[in-house]
Image 1 (spheres, rainbow, N blue to C red):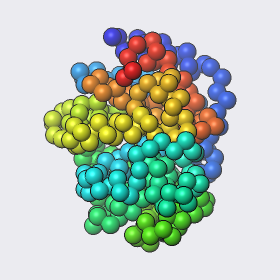
Image 2 (cartoon, rainbow, N blue to C red):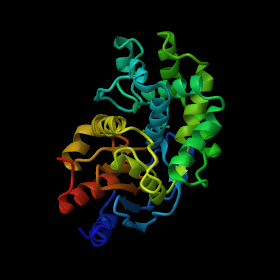
Image 3 (cartoon, helix red, strand yellow):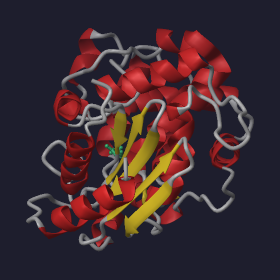
Image 4 (cartoon, rainbow, N blue to C red):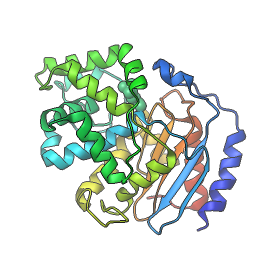
Amino acid sequence: MNFEDLIQDIYHKIKTIEDPGEMASYIPELSKVDPTNFGVHISTINNINFGIGNYNDKFSIQSIAKVLALILAYRIVGDEIWNRVGVEPSGTAFNSLVQLESDQGIPRNPFLNAGAIVVSDILLSNLKNPKEDFIAFVRSISENKTIQYSNKIAQSEKKVGYRNVALCNFIKSFGRIENEPSDVLDFYYDLCSLEMSCKELSELFLFLANNGNDIKSNKSVLSESQSKRINALMQTCGFYDESGEFAFKVGLPGKSGVGGGIIAIHPDQYAIAVWSPKLNKKGNSHKGMKFLEEFTTRSELSIF
Ligand code: GLN
């Protein structure tokens, strides 16, 4: 498969289509990003690395960081994590509160804001210096010391984070948050503010295409079974109430963020990252979804 030609071809086609999406302006700092940015980067387990467009520009990875938080918490507490957060798709928006009442403060899955807030609480309880330890973990699995939080973006989100405050307090009211809600949220905003490029994202996530093992060092980031489970969750819950549609049209485990990034994994093949900041109604990158749909359709490579 000549990924380079295919990616170039699809990239140029999707670049010119009209984009009805909107920027994630609910986080004021994110609306300052140039909406015409569009980048793609693929990293394969056979060591093909190819990028096009703004693939080297860093952007706010937002909810893609929820996967990294989950991975670190899973490594630390193991299967106990599933007592605090479920593994079912919710069919609701990423910031929804509705199911928490009937589910007694147990979020349906770790990729909803509610779920990632619980994962943040777990990390806060288990790490000595959560902010420093988390970024050290991300840097260690990516072997990239340039990865940083954006304090500007974290502060911008904190100022208007009323829904996340509500989610965290609501979960705490069921006795299911151990730490102070303001500390949990500060950490949650920090992790959402991580900035990475498509190239960095596809390189970092490649271990999930390689049974949990780092490609270069062959070190285990997750066991094979844990890696399968993270991929399964990305497949079923990675796009909130558009997860079914992503499986239907793209057919890969993946995760989106409101910064307009998407990471998708083809087990045993590759990790691919796409960035285009304008979002569809479900909060997922409009062009990113279109690009990946065409990529898996024309390459005839998906997990189905
Ligand atoms: N930080 C964002 C929020 O809490 C993450 C949402 C997302 O990327 N879907 O709203």
